[in-house]
Image (cartoon, rainbow, N blue to C red; front, side, top):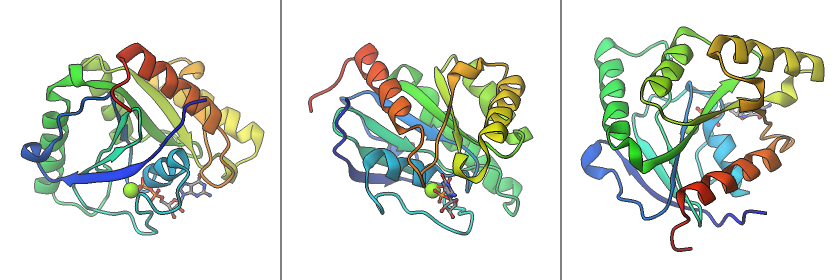
Length: 199
Ligand SMILES: Nc1nc2c(ncn2[C@@H]2O[C@H](COP(=O)(O)OP(=O)(O)O)[C@@H](O)[C@H]2O)c(=O)[nH]1
Ligand SMILES: [Mg+2]
């Protein structure tokens, strides 16, 4: 099983601060509050590596973590209602800059709340990934908050909305650590496909 040894690297506010990684880069994207930081902490087996917040944050930064055999990039969340059009444009610019050198991005974990149908912002994000031919896996978060039947329903709904197979969706819970093994397996595949860097 993949061994993860995590440390925070840096927060980048614009492309001049993006890192040149010598390891496969996996990006994590999703709405504010969907559970990106909690997911990263679960992967890293750490409580406070990434900052978890009750309030949806509005920081527009790419947070990089060195996970040992890969780099994880936590992208700024989208869909936060109270942001101006200017802020939205800045977010889009940052994302475009980040994915500009897309051959350097090994994979994207696209997070979606298992309880809710995807929003227009979620669908735009998936469309963006498809358009740029960026390989992604959907991580359906907060599975502990629903019954098994509801979780199955949530996965089916997300698969239909994203037009992807249910097999491309992994239900996780950062509370119970459900789904962690599947995510680690997927991550291992991604690393072996993209060549692991120096460990
Ligand atoms: N019950 C439950 N709560 C979660 C889970 N993941 C995140 N949360 C909660 O959702 C809120 C937002 O989480 P956070 O990781 O900061 O989301 P981010 O904005 O996408 O980084 C916090 O209150 C977390 O405690 C989960 O798997 N289960
Ligand atoms: Mg976060």
